[in-house]
Length: 328
Image 1 (cartoon, helix red, strand yellow):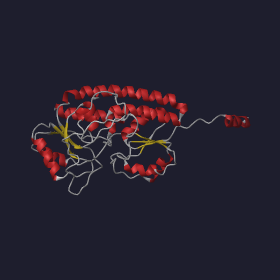
Image 2 (cartoon, rainbow, N blue to C red; image 1 turned 90 degrees about the vertical axis):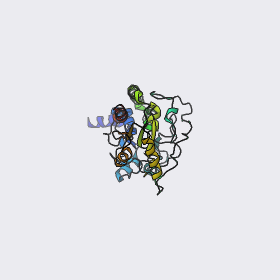
Image 3 (cartoon, rainbow, N blue to C red; image 1 turned 120 degrees about the vertical axis):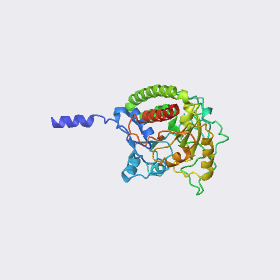
Image 4 (cartoon, rainbow, N blue to C red; image 1 turned 30 degrees about the vertical axis):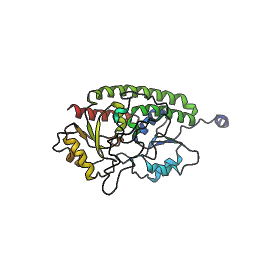
């Protein structure tokens, strides 16, 4: 009897394994987790509270990247520390870079938010897969870097904070499902169904957030750093500037002077600090101007509990924080 059971097991075709998936930041991790559903759990590399631009992989994480069946990430423009780890992977190993993926709508740093015609929509109408709007003529992102020449990351070209446009997330759900299906065809129907369900939920949330933000979209705000162009464009918000260019930048005196003048003009209703960063400079800029200090924004979701619900929580938290301050 034991021989018969062993023989039967040996003759049974081995089921394909669900790919081991590694992701870079919480929003990407959440989207992948939704597509995988109960089939598996992706691994998140960025530790809670860590800086997405400047992070050092633990040896176990580097090994996970090397052994992963699929790596899903934004791209080297956001997480350069992952680019070098990817070089250790076998030739032909699967990786999905979302910044350069077909269908991802891109924005340039300093581009006016009102140029985006998709505010409040779940989808994108972009045949080329990229946004080619012009630049904001009065943007000073190329000027007023701090006197030491330091900046958090390159602010020329495409803004890598692409996940803050829910339309991009809609595109990515399909791309993630397609790549997982290619690697694991036996579960293709499940990946597709999970992606469709996640897209339906995201569309409903998108409509709710658009309705919440519509009454305040013409009220100017200032943020800690230049990371919210996609979110502002999608929902038609009005951003009057940022304290720093990058989240690791130290703004120079000229930049702070210009921003202080903007705040003193009285048009800006709210200025927002950011998680992971000391709010002292924001408080100093707001003092005596009449601008309210809003809650801390968290563009990468570094303070959130990782999981399939993190992307919705990120968008909801940001919209609520902005609306609460502007309505106050």
